[in-house]
Image (cartoon, one colour):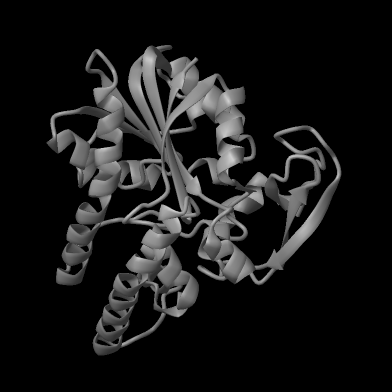
Length: 319
């Protein structure tokens, strides 16, 4: 299978780098191949090298990689939990919306099953979702009743300056060309619009402690691993100014640490890998994972308070 072997750094164009670590798909086990994460010798941007070819990369994304609500009692309880922890994201985005003089439409890029957009719509906002998975966009339409399209932001059928707010939660790290998406977002935003972006933070304490076992590195799906400075520099080069930052996510930081510590307990990973287990074993593992997540809240809060949280969420406005 061919690979993307361009050695120039996508951020600064420098072609010298050093190898940081090697790892494989620890979370979903879609492959047993080992991959290398390198760091640019000039700007220190971290990325997978060589990058898998797009036709191969799709094999590393299992069916329902995104969350799809089910009809069981456990699934409904999981959705209630997700609604609760997504409140963190909703409040941050509403802060961005309130900074805009005119009320417009929110576009969520990489919307998955659309639960986040449903929460915004329930609070009176006009919303549209975009995802490259046809199945995910279908779930957003059918189960969460939000308008959603299947496609890429760089080729989406939207008018320039159509949206007042665009959100990208855990999207940029999956892209061959993150700047192209940021520039596309800039063109689709109104002049006073806001872009909200969240990515794993490779400058976090968790990465220093766990290295290639840190859940946020997510080999081989994460093609770029951003530190906070990398994200700010990318947005600046794309025509944005960062106005607000947040280093803690109730949905992502504790769960990410729990999965790093005990990947075998992660409910989504077990579901994707189709682990055979009895109802009792499944409930026990789910309970243990939930307890571990609760235990991970205090250390991840401390980490975030020191501006070294495992995720970084920013609000940016057009220059």
